[in-house]
Length: 54
Image 1 (cartoon, helix red, strand yellow):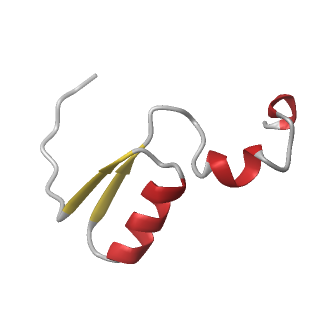
Image 2 (image 1 turned 90 degrees about the vertical axis):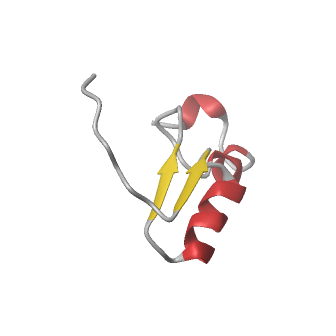
Protein backbone atom coordinates (compact mmCIF):
# COMPACT_ATOMS: atom_id res chain seq x y z
CA UNK A 1 0.00 0.00 0.00
CA UNK A 2 1.31 3.43 -0.90
CA UNK A 3 1.21 6.12 1.75
CA UNK A 4 -0.50 9.32 0.78
CA UNK A 5 -1.25 12.49 2.67
CA UNK A 6 -4.92 13.43 2.89
CA UNK A 7 -6.50 16.42 4.59
CA UNK A 8 -9.95 16.32 6.10
CA UNK A 9 -12.05 18.32 8.54
CA UNK A 10 -13.43 15.21 10.23
CA UNK A 11 -12.31 11.57 10.31
CA UNK A 12 -14.95 9.00 11.23
CA UNK A 13 -13.71 5.47 11.86
CA UNK A 14 -16.50 2.93 11.49
CA UNK A 15 -19.35 3.00 9.02
CA UNK A 16 -22.04 1.61 11.27
CA UNK A 17 -25.24 3.49 11.93
CA UNK A 18 -23.52 6.11 14.09
CA UNK A 19 -20.64 6.62 11.67
CA UNK A 20 -22.89 7.08 8.65
CA UNK A 21 -25.20 9.42 10.59
CA UNK A 22 -22.20 11.41 11.79
CA UNK A 23 -20.80 11.75 8.27
CA UNK A 24 -24.16 12.91 6.93
CA UNK A 25 -24.66 15.35 9.80
CA UNK A 26 -21.20 16.84 9.34
CA UNK A 27 -21.79 17.63 5.65
CA UNK A 28 -18.24 18.89 5.28
CA UNK A 29 -15.10 17.39 3.89
CA UNK A 30 -15.37 14.07 5.72
CA UNK A 31 -13.52 10.77 5.44
CA UNK A 32 -15.53 7.74 6.55
CA UNK A 33 -13.44 4.61 7.17
CA UNK A 34 -14.87 1.10 7.61
CA UNK A 35 -12.76 -2.03 7.97
CA UNK A 36 -15.35 -4.28 6.30
CA UNK A 37 -16.86 -4.04 2.81
CA UNK A 38 -20.28 -2.97 4.15
CA UNK A 39 -21.65 0.26 5.55
CA UNK A 40 -24.75 0.64 7.68
CA UNK A 41 -24.77 -3.06 8.58
CA UNK A 42 -26.99 -2.47 11.62
CA UNK A 43 -29.69 -1.17 9.29
CA UNK A 44 -29.79 -4.36 7.20
CA UNK A 45 -28.68 -7.12 9.55
CA UNK A 46 -31.94 -7.04 11.50
CA UNK A 47 -34.11 -7.53 8.44
CA UNK A 48 -32.04 -10.00 6.42
CA UNK A 49 -30.19 -13.12 7.53
CA UNK A 50 -26.39 -12.65 7.26
CA UNK A 51 -26.08 -15.31 4.54
CA UNK A 52 -28.31 -13.24 2.22
CA UNK A 53 -25.98 -10.22 2.19
CA UNK A 54 -23.96 -9.94 -1.03
